[in-house]
Length: 137
Figure 1 (cartoon, helix red, strand yellow):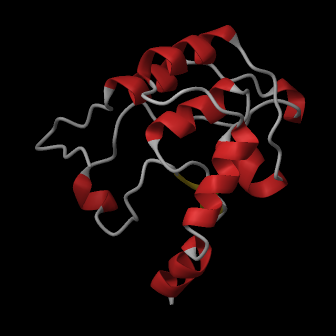
Figure 2 (cartoon, rainbow, N blue to C red):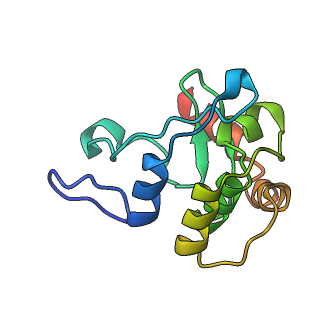
């Protein structure tokens, strides 16, 4: 895990590049993903599960999207966002050159299809949602 100290809340380079990309919502047919530009302060997030590849939406949506950062980058490169995967089981999108280039530059694994990455990660963490529910009780 990458630790931040003091006021240094910058993302690692791969996530900083993702945060700069404008995702095309396309009137609900595209990707609904608006990443923050930096990490929130530790005092605000200490109790949050810390895993780069988990999606937690603003309305309580949650789910496993990828097993590692490289997988997450390849999912985005396939033109699919975390909300689309978790809420709609959508694995095909509109790939764009910016995210494909970003993933190729930062990923340490070969490109794989979003469906394969997500299915593998969800099998690895089958009790994720139940675990979050248990933390909230």
